[in-house]
Length: 124
Image 1 (cartoon, rainbow, N blue to C red):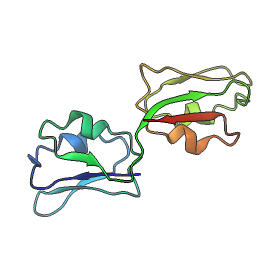
Image 2 (cartoon, rainbow, N blue to C red; image 1 turned 45 degrees about the horizontal axis):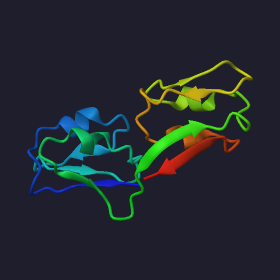
Image 3 (tube, one colour; image 1 turned 60 degrees about the vertical axis):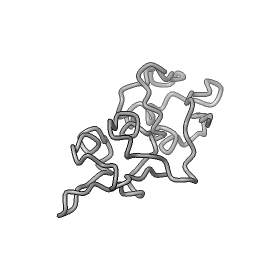
Image 4 (cartoon, rainbow, N blue to C red; image 1 turned 180 degrees about the vertical axis):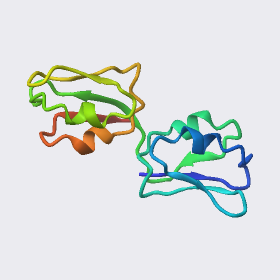
């Protein structure tokens, strides 16, 4: 999963780097920004906020529409909650957890941490 920065459109403001919670955006010696695909989770927060419209998904990038927790599979281990950078997951240990859609940034980190396949992702 990754997004890319069109360097010809980039205003070099650095707001994307400031926003990225995954430290995936860096600046080189020429003040040009780039996104490390190994660190990019595909949340799209940088693209949504880029005023220069310089950030876009790669052609193979799947855009997450919704993430939810299957209460039948969730064992309440809290791994998803502890890994959520947006603090969007609530619950009680040993009971099914829930994702607050208003807070969720749809980065998919919770999905990668769940060992019970209880996190469901719906793509656009």
